[in-house]
Image (cartoon, rainbow, N blue to C red; front, top):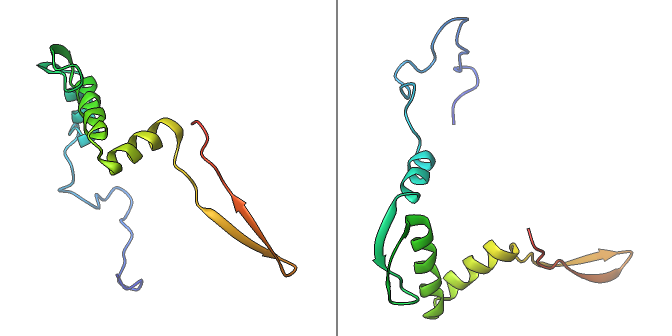
Amino acid sequence: MSNLKTLKLPKKGEISNPKGKAPGTRNRATILKQISKVRVTIENPLTKEEETQPAEIMMNYALYAKALSGDVQTIKEINDTLYGKITEKTDVTTGGEKLNITFTRHEP
């Protein structure tokens, strides 16, 4: 952690990070969005037929195929995406009385 006494605010007009990212540099999310729209021809892991689709759709097919093979973490990720994350059960004590409150999944 920095010592608060050594921190210096930049003066008006001063560049605090002169070697920072160059203007116009694309971030990872922008690049991935662009790549996900590229059309690819591969075997659909669900139907086993060759298809040409945007990469994003083919990645989702692969995700479903992995879930169908029994991968529990992938099943959880798909369910969380479709229905929202399951919140945990909470015990609340008020006036000596213990209440069990369960928050359930709802559609986003």
